[in-house]
Image (cartoon, rainbow, N blue to C red; front, side, top):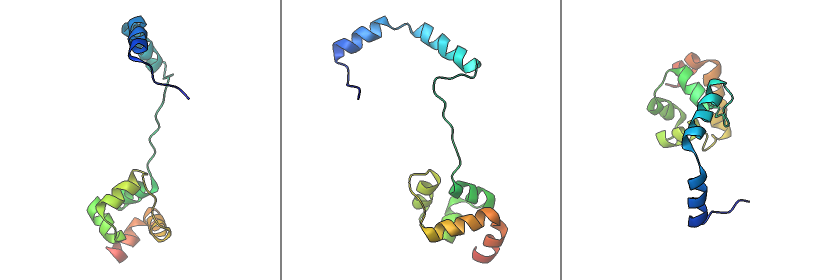
Length: 104
C-alpha cells in the first residue's frame, strides 16, 4: 500500500519532473495507440434497452415503475435492477416495440 508524500517529498519530486518531456511522451504513446492507461466505456443493459426503446429517461422510468434517479443509477452501473426489472429490461432489448405497445 502506498503512503502519502510529505510536503517536502512532494516538492522534491515535482522539482525533478520535466512536464514537457512527460507531455511529449504521452502524445507519442497516444499516437502509437499505446496509452499508459486505457478507459473502456461499456453501455449497461439498462442504457441499451432504453436507447433501443427510443424513450426518454422519464418515460422509461415510468414504464418500469421507478424514479428517474434510480434509472440513472442503473444506467451508470452504480446500482443493479431487481430480478423482475432485469427481465423487463431483457424484453426491451429483444423487442422494444412489443414492450412499448403493451406497457407504454
